[in-house]
Length: 385
Image (cartoon, rainbow, N blue to C red; front, side, top):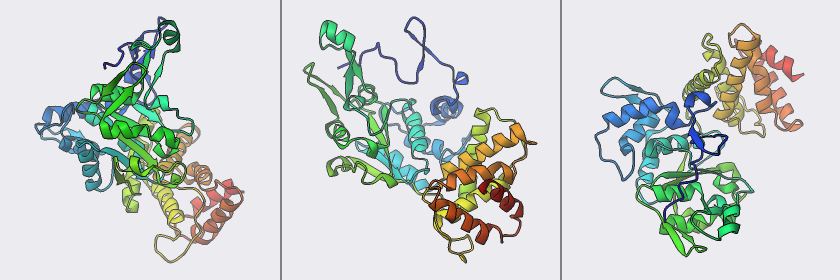
C-alpha cells in the first residue's frame, strides 16, 4: 500500500500561504538536521565508499561507522567524530541496523543517545526526520497512522484520508525510523511496535489492507536508564530489539574532548563571537561534575555526597555554552569562573533543600582547598549566597 504523497515529510520544509511545502535551506534554521549540517562529509564518504551496502543504505556499514567515529579519507577529507566512545559500541549498533532486529540505545541521561540515533539515521537513510517523540501522552496514531478527519467524514476511509506515521513512512520507503524515549510511551502504545518489528507489516483494517516493510527499513529507539519502571518494556517487545548501552565517558580527558567539540559546534550555530579557548574552565566543569557524580574526588582521597541530578555530559555542554554566551555578550570574550558558576549551581541544585547542602559541603571541603581554584571558589560562593 503506497503512502499518500500529499503529506509532506516532517522537517522537510516550511508551509507557504497556499498550503504547499517548500524546502527550507539549512542556513535558515537554528539547528539543521544531521544530514544537512554534515552534508559535505556524507557526500565525501559516499564518493569514497566502495564497500557493499545493504539495500537502500546510502553508505556501507564501514562508512557509517567512520562517519560517527571520525577519520581521514584517502582524498584527505577529514570526517569529524560525532561520537567519542568505544568503537565496538558503534560497530554493534550499525551491524544491528543491517539485520532484521531493531536497535535500542540505552543509557543514563546525557550519554548522547538521541545524538547517535540522529546521526545513524542520517548516515544510513539520508533522513533523520522520521521521528516519534515519546511522552506520557503519545497516542497510538503517532506510531501507526491517523486520519484526516475532514476527508474521512466527507468520503469515508480511503488512502487519501490516511495520515501515515513516521514509522509507516519508513516501512513504505525502506528508511530508518526513530522513537525517542520509548519507556515514556504508555505500555499499550509501545506494544503496537511488536507486529511492526516481528512481522514487518502494519495492518490497516479500516481499508482491509496492510503496509509491508520494504528492504532498508529499521527502527532505532532510545530509552533512559533512570526511567526503568515508568513504562517498562514488555518482554515481547524487548526481544525485538538488540540493546546497546551507551556509557558515560570513561575518562576525564574523553569527557573534556566531547564537551569542547560540542561547545564549538554550538557556538558556531548560535553565532557566538569567537574568543580564546576555554579548555581550562571546561576541564573544571567536567571535574566538578564527575566528582559529584562518582561520589569521590579525582585523587580518590575524599568521599563526597552526590546530588539528585544526573550531572551528565550534556549538562556540562549546556553550562559551558551558557558561560561562553555570558563571556561574549557581557564580558571580554574570555571564559572565566564567574561565567560558569551560575550554570553549575543550576545544574547541581535541583532539590533546593538537599542539593544545596551537598553543594555547599563540596565547595568548602574540596573546592576551597584545591590549588589554583580560588577564583572558581569565590565565583561559586557569590552565586550560592
